[in-house]
Image (cartoon, rainbow, N blue to C red):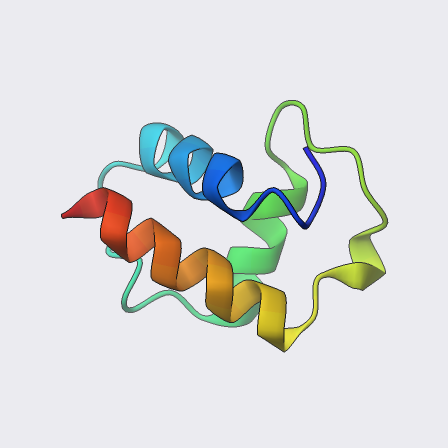
Length: 64
């Protein structure tokens, strides 16, 4: 997975962390969880605020 794979990342987070409320996660924690996902293979420094916002919003949608 790459940073651009927002939906795939959100699904993976939803499956791996079902007890986390994605609406309350801090971006630093979100970033760390994304880069630790199995299959994530991208430059860690590319996970900026905009992409983290998109991942968080998609994760919230997946959790509903």
